[in-house]
Length: 317
Image (cartoon, rainbow, N blue to C red):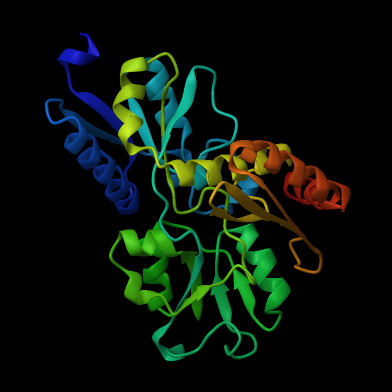
Protein backbone atom coordinates (compact mmCIF):
# COMPACT_ATOMS: atom_id res chain seq x y z
CA UNK A 1 0.00 0.00 0.00
CA UNK A 2 1.38 3.42 -0.93
CA UNK A 3 2.24 5.78 1.94
CA UNK A 4 -0.25 8.35 0.60
CA UNK A 5 -3.14 5.92 1.20
CA UNK A 6 -2.20 4.52 4.61
CA UNK A 7 -1.27 5.93 8.03
CA UNK A 8 2.29 7.15 8.55
CA UNK A 9 3.82 4.92 11.25
CA UNK A 10 5.97 6.64 13.89
CA UNK A 11 8.32 4.42 15.91
CA UNK A 12 9.03 5.13 19.58
CA UNK A 13 10.55 3.62 22.67
CA UNK A 14 8.04 2.69 25.39
CA UNK A 15 9.26 4.92 28.21
CA UNK A 16 6.99 7.72 29.40
CA UNK A 17 9.42 10.41 28.25
CA UNK A 18 9.86 8.80 24.83
CA UNK A 19 6.10 8.63 24.39
CA UNK A 20 5.58 12.24 25.47
CA UNK A 21 8.15 13.29 22.89
CA UNK A 22 6.72 11.04 20.17
CA UNK A 23 3.14 12.14 20.77
CA UNK A 24 4.28 15.78 20.54
CA UNK A 25 5.79 15.01 17.12
CA UNK A 26 2.61 13.15 16.14
CA UNK A 27 0.50 16.17 17.11
CA UNK A 28 2.76 18.63 15.26
CA UNK A 29 2.62 16.48 12.12
CA UNK A 30 -1.15 16.24 12.42
CA UNK A 31 -1.40 20.04 12.72
CA UNK A 32 0.77 20.52 9.64
CA UNK A 33 -0.90 17.80 7.56
CA UNK A 34 -4.50 17.58 8.74
CA UNK A 35 -5.61 15.24 5.96
CA UNK A 36 -3.01 12.59 6.87
CA UNK A 37 -3.14 9.96 9.59
CA UNK A 38 -0.17 9.37 11.92
CA UNK A 39 0.00 6.37 14.27
CA UNK A 40 2.56 5.42 16.90
CA UNK A 41 4.16 1.99 17.25
CA UNK A 42 6.26 1.30 20.35
CA UNK A 43 9.10 -1.12 21.01
CA UNK A 44 11.82 -1.77 23.57
CA UNK A 45 15.49 -1.23 22.81
CA UNK A 46 18.62 -2.86 24.17
CA UNK A 47 19.25 0.17 26.38
CA UNK A 48 15.77 -0.19 27.89
CA UNK A 49 16.16 -3.89 28.61
CA UNK A 50 19.65 -4.03 30.16
CA UNK A 51 19.39 -2.17 33.45
CA UNK A 52 22.00 -3.89 35.62
CA UNK A 53 25.09 -2.85 33.67
CA UNK A 54 26.56 0.64 33.29
CA UNK A 55 25.85 2.01 29.81
CA UNK A 56 29.52 2.59 29.09
CA UNK A 57 30.28 -1.09 29.72
CA UNK A 58 27.60 -2.26 27.29
CA UNK A 59 28.89 -0.14 24.42
CA UNK A 60 26.93 2.78 23.11
CA UNK A 61 26.31 2.36 19.40
CA UNK A 62 22.57 2.29 18.87
CA UNK A 63 21.71 1.27 22.43
CA UNK A 64 18.43 3.18 22.29
CA UNK A 65 17.94 3.25 18.51
CA UNK A 66 18.86 -0.04 16.82
CA UNK A 67 15.48 -1.77 17.06
CA UNK A 68 13.70 1.32 15.71
CA UNK A 69 16.20 1.56 12.86
CA UNK A 70 15.72 -2.08 11.90
CA UNK A 71 11.97 -1.49 11.75
CA UNK A 72 12.46 1.49 9.44
CA UNK A 73 14.78 -0.48 7.18
CA UNK A 74 12.23 -3.32 7.11
CA UNK A 75 9.51 -0.86 6.10
CA UNK A 76 7.24 -1.49 9.10
CA UNK A 77 7.95 1.97 10.56
CA UNK A 78 8.23 5.17 8.49
CA UNK A 79 10.06 7.41 10.94
CA UNK A 80 11.37 7.28 14.50
CA UNK A 81 11.56 9.93 17.20
CA UNK A 82 14.71 10.00 19.33
CA UNK A 83 16.18 12.17 22.01
CA UNK A 84 18.91 13.49 19.73
CA UNK A 85 21.58 12.87 22.38
CA UNK A 86 20.86 9.12 22.06
CA UNK A 87 21.23 9.02 18.28
CA UNK A 88 24.72 7.90 17.13
CA UNK A 89 26.56 10.28 14.81
CA UNK A 90 26.98 7.50 12.23
CA UNK A 91 23.59 6.30 10.99
CA UNK A 92 22.96 2.96 9.25
CA UNK A 93 23.11 3.00 5.45
CA UNK A 94 19.75 4.06 4.06
CA UNK A 95 18.69 6.16 7.06
CA UNK A 96 19.00 9.93 7.54
CA UNK A 97 18.25 12.58 10.13
CA UNK A 98 15.11 14.00 8.57
CA UNK A 99 14.43 16.76 11.10
CA UNK A 100 15.81 18.32 14.27
CA UNK A 101 13.12 20.07 16.32
CA UNK A 102 13.31 23.26 18.36
CA UNK A 103 15.51 22.72 21.39
CA UNK A 104 14.39 22.80 24.99
CA UNK A 105 16.85 23.88 27.71
CA UNK A 106 19.88 21.58 27.09
CA UNK A 107 21.39 22.01 30.56
CA UNK A 108 21.80 19.40 33.28
CA UNK A 109 19.72 19.58 36.46
CA UNK A 110 20.41 18.61 40.05
CA UNK A 111 17.44 16.97 41.78
CA UNK A 112 17.91 16.56 45.52
CA UNK A 113 16.28 14.39 48.17
CA UNK A 114 13.85 16.36 50.32
CA UNK A 115 16.28 16.32 53.26
CA UNK A 116 18.65 18.53 51.26
CA UNK A 117 16.05 21.12 50.26
CA UNK A 118 17.63 24.48 49.55
CA UNK A 119 21.10 23.10 48.97
CA UNK A 120 23.19 23.26 45.79
CA UNK A 121 26.10 21.23 44.45
CA UNK A 122 28.48 23.59 46.21
CA UNK A 123 26.72 23.38 49.58
CA UNK A 124 26.01 19.63 49.74
CA UNK A 125 27.73 17.97 52.72
CA UNK A 126 31.01 16.13 52.18
CA UNK A 127 30.40 12.59 50.97
CA UNK A 128 26.89 13.24 49.64
CA UNK A 129 26.06 10.59 47.03
CA UNK A 130 24.73 11.63 43.64
CA UNK A 131 23.39 9.22 41.03
CA UNK A 132 24.21 9.52 37.34
CA UNK A 133 24.66 7.10 34.47
CA UNK A 134 26.53 9.70 32.39
CA UNK A 135 30.32 9.65 32.27
CA UNK A 136 30.18 13.21 30.95
CA UNK A 137 28.36 14.47 34.04
CA UNK A 138 30.47 12.31 36.34
CA UNK A 139 33.81 13.61 35.04
CA UNK A 140 32.86 17.29 35.05
CA UNK A 141 31.18 17.29 38.45
CA UNK A 142 34.05 15.35 40.00
CA UNK A 143 36.35 18.04 38.64
CA UNK A 144 34.40 20.94 40.12
CA UNK A 145 32.89 19.33 43.23
CA UNK A 146 35.40 16.80 44.63
CA UNK A 147 33.57 16.66 47.98
CA UNK A 148 30.67 14.76 46.36
CA UNK A 149 30.57 11.00 45.66
CA UNK A 150 28.89 9.36 42.68
CA UNK A 151 27.08 6.07 42.02
CA UNK A 152 25.63 4.70 38.81
CA UNK A 153 21.86 4.88 38.49
CA UNK A 154 19.89 3.26 35.64
CA UNK A 155 16.28 3.11 34.59
CA UNK A 156 13.93 5.61 33.02
CA UNK A 157 13.46 9.05 34.51
CA UNK A 158 10.60 8.05 36.81
CA UNK A 159 12.53 5.02 38.05
CA UNK A 160 15.51 7.20 38.93
CA UNK A 161 13.31 9.69 40.77
CA UNK A 162 11.72 6.83 42.73
CA UNK A 163 15.17 5.60 43.79
CA UNK A 164 16.04 9.12 44.91
CA UNK A 165 12.82 9.50 46.90
CA UNK A 166 13.41 6.10 48.53
CA UNK A 167 16.68 7.46 49.93
CA UNK A 168 19.13 5.52 47.77
CA UNK A 169 20.82 8.79 46.79
CA UNK A 170 21.19 12.29 48.18
CA UNK A 171 20.55 13.60 44.68
CA UNK A 172 20.55 12.66 41.02
CA UNK A 173 21.59 14.55 37.90
CA UNK A 174 19.17 14.57 34.97
CA UNK A 175 18.45 16.64 31.87
CA UNK A 176 16.36 19.76 32.42
CA UNK A 177 14.52 19.08 29.14
CA UNK A 178 13.34 15.62 30.18
CA UNK A 179 12.02 16.83 33.52
CA UNK A 180 10.22 19.77 31.94
CA UNK A 181 8.69 17.64 29.17
CA UNK A 182 7.18 15.40 31.84
CA UNK A 183 5.88 18.36 33.83
CA UNK A 184 8.41 17.75 36.60
CA UNK A 185 10.29 21.02 36.40
CA UNK A 186 9.40 21.71 40.03
CA UNK A 187 11.68 18.84 41.06
CA UNK A 188 14.76 20.75 39.87
CA UNK A 189 16.91 21.92 42.79
CA UNK A 190 19.56 23.59 40.64
CA UNK A 191 20.14 24.12 36.94
CA UNK A 192 23.83 23.39 36.46
CA UNK A 193 25.44 26.13 34.38
CA UNK A 194 27.92 25.52 31.54
CA UNK A 195 30.75 26.74 33.75
CA UNK A 196 30.36 23.46 35.64
CA UNK A 197 28.79 21.04 33.16
CA UNK A 198 28.77 21.29 29.38
CA UNK A 199 25.76 19.38 28.12
CA UNK A 200 25.58 16.29 25.92
CA UNK A 201 25.67 16.62 22.15
CA UNK A 202 22.10 17.17 20.97
CA UNK A 203 20.65 17.33 24.48
CA UNK A 204 17.25 19.02 24.63
CA UNK A 205 16.46 18.46 20.94
CA UNK A 206 14.51 15.70 19.21
CA UNK A 207 15.96 13.96 16.17
CA UNK A 208 13.53 12.39 13.71
CA UNK A 209 15.11 9.61 11.66
CA UNK A 210 13.68 8.17 8.44
CA UNK A 211 14.66 6.40 5.22
CA UNK A 212 16.81 8.62 3.02
CA UNK A 213 14.99 7.60 -0.16
CA UNK A 214 11.56 8.38 1.30
CA UNK A 215 10.99 11.82 -0.18
CA UNK A 216 7.36 11.89 0.95
CA UNK A 217 8.22 11.43 4.63
CA UNK A 218 11.06 13.96 4.36
CA UNK A 219 8.58 16.48 2.96
CA UNK A 220 6.12 15.74 5.79
CA UNK A 221 8.87 16.39 8.35
CA UNK A 222 10.02 19.72 6.92
CA UNK A 223 7.63 21.92 9.01
CA UNK A 224 9.16 20.51 12.21
CA UNK A 225 12.72 21.55 11.35
CA UNK A 226 14.13 24.32 13.54
CA UNK A 227 16.91 26.17 11.75
CA UNK A 228 18.92 27.47 14.72
CA UNK A 229 18.73 24.18 16.62
CA UNK A 230 19.81 22.32 13.49
CA UNK A 231 22.88 24.55 13.05
CA UNK A 232 23.86 24.07 16.68
CA UNK A 233 23.27 20.32 16.81
CA UNK A 234 24.96 19.49 13.51
CA UNK A 235 28.06 21.36 14.71
CA UNK A 236 27.94 19.46 18.00
CA UNK A 237 27.51 16.12 16.23
CA UNK A 238 30.43 16.88 13.89
CA UNK A 239 32.58 17.62 16.96
CA UNK A 240 31.58 14.32 18.57
CA UNK A 241 31.98 12.34 15.34
CA UNK A 242 35.46 13.78 14.78
CA UNK A 243 36.53 12.66 18.24
CA UNK A 244 35.09 9.21 17.47
CA UNK A 245 33.16 9.44 20.69
CA UNK A 246 29.70 8.23 21.57
CA UNK A 247 27.00 9.27 23.98
CA UNK A 248 28.68 7.35 26.81
CA UNK A 249 32.02 9.14 26.88
CA UNK A 250 32.93 12.31 28.83
CA UNK A 251 32.50 14.76 25.96
CA UNK A 252 30.43 17.91 26.48
CA UNK A 253 29.43 20.90 24.40
CA UNK A 254 27.80 24.31 24.58
CA UNK A 255 26.63 26.27 21.54
CA UNK A 256 25.31 29.78 21.03
CA UNK A 257 24.04 31.37 17.81
CA UNK A 258 24.20 35.16 17.51
CA UNK A 259 23.02 36.38 14.13
CA UNK A 260 25.03 34.46 11.55
CA UNK A 261 27.79 33.52 14.03
CA UNK A 262 28.06 30.25 15.93
CA UNK A 263 30.15 29.77 19.06
CA UNK A 264 30.93 26.14 19.85
CA UNK A 265 32.56 25.16 23.12
CA UNK A 266 33.76 21.60 23.66
CA UNK A 267 35.19 19.54 26.50
CA UNK A 268 36.84 16.18 27.06
CA UNK A 269 37.59 15.00 30.61
CA UNK A 270 39.15 12.03 32.35
CA UNK A 271 36.80 9.89 34.44
CA UNK A 272 38.42 10.94 37.71
CA UNK A 273 37.88 14.59 36.81
CA UNK A 274 41.55 15.39 37.27
CA UNK A 275 42.11 16.32 33.63
CA UNK A 276 39.62 18.50 31.80
CA UNK A 277 40.43 19.92 28.36
CA UNK A 278 38.11 22.67 27.17
CA UNK A 279 38.19 25.18 24.31
CA UNK A 280 35.87 27.11 22.00
CA UNK A 281 35.70 28.50 18.47
CA UNK A 282 33.46 31.01 16.75
CA UNK A 283 32.65 31.01 13.05
CA UNK A 284 29.91 31.30 10.46
CA UNK A 285 26.68 29.37 11.04
CA UNK A 286 27.01 28.21 7.43
CA UNK A 287 30.19 26.36 8.39
CA UNK A 288 29.04 24.89 11.69
CA UNK A 289 30.05 21.31 10.96
CA UNK A 290 33.51 22.41 9.82
CA UNK A 291 33.78 24.33 13.10
CA UNK A 292 33.01 21.14 15.01
CA UNK A 293 35.71 19.24 13.14
CA UNK A 294 38.24 22.02 13.76
CA UNK A 295 37.46 22.18 17.48
CA UNK A 296 37.83 18.41 17.78
CA UNK A 297 41.21 18.63 16.07
CA UNK A 298 42.28 21.36 18.48
CA UNK A 299 41.27 19.37 21.58
CA UNK A 300 42.89 16.23 20.22
CA UNK A 301 46.13 18.15 19.90
CA UNK A 302 45.86 19.14 23.55
CA UNK A 303 45.56 15.55 24.77
CA UNK A 304 41.88 14.66 24.32
CA UNK A 305 42.60 11.57 22.23
CA UNK A 306 44.82 10.09 24.92
CA UNK A 307 42.02 10.54 27.47
CA UNK A 308 39.44 8.89 25.20
CA UNK A 309 41.80 6.01 24.34
CA UNK A 310 42.42 5.37 28.05
CA UNK A 311 38.68 5.30 28.77
CA UNK A 312 38.02 2.93 25.86
CA UNK A 313 40.76 0.60 27.13
CA UNK A 314 39.35 0.69 30.67
CA UNK A 315 35.85 -0.33 29.61
CA UNK A 316 37.05 -3.05 27.26
CA UNK A 317 39.10 -4.70 29.99
